[in-house]
Image 1 (tube, rainbow, N blue to C red):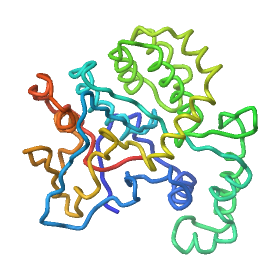
Image 2: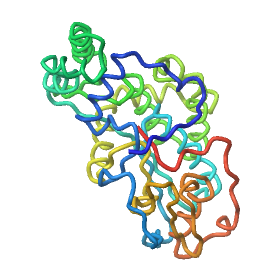
Image 3: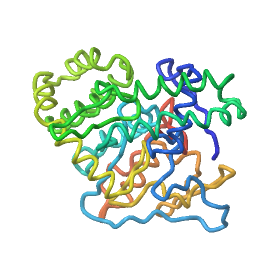
Image 4: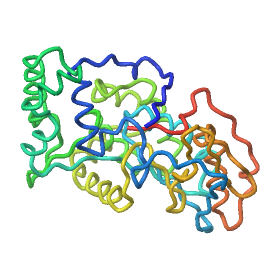
Length: 327
């Protein structure tokens, strides 16, 4: 894989401990949530170099729909939200912009944790590969991972005994639900976009449960309605999101579809970073795939008759999401 390094605000710049590094490596192998980089629907990040430029061609209709799959505190997901926001605000009700959230459903917590906490019988190998300074430290970390993983408070639990998780922890899972509730409650989606911007700027996966209300009130949302929705509908909402991610084989945040077609298509990426994509008569460079104007072009190319808004050129934002990368 090609490692993409981005600059981000300090809330994302966390220095991991050995345990976190090790746990992440294990997750990378055992769960689709663990990918540090976006994989796309088939699990392939880059296509081979080719002289043929892929063409984005979703089915055209009167009102195109852009679906974006994220986690509320995935930095790449937050960045794609920043990129989509000006497109959604420009288009208004001319197109549909639908957020979707990624959850993990756990039917057997004991089995789930065993596969994600590490294998103590492999500690000699882990030490050999410099993951740990000693076997005792390895075993200690694995046991700590197992204990943390088995803590039911780290999950949302349904009445039938299923557990639900989000990659960055319980507070992220909670915030995912609150953002779904907020989306469903407002007709003016600009209010929701303002809420998301405030959350992304001021809250983290460590303080969201105490931080979100101020942001919601500032955006003009009814926090009592969001709380009521959370308390009554959480599991139902999660199951709906899981159904969408399963149906569309979504493997990471962010994943974007326009009229049901993955954007950008995986074939547009190349190992050398010089991939291109053709949208209508325009050829887009790989470095610009996740920019407001290019996202706008993908939507505009999917209208049967494009509206006047499509003539507007959207400026790049200060921190465009990288061409590839995700949680």
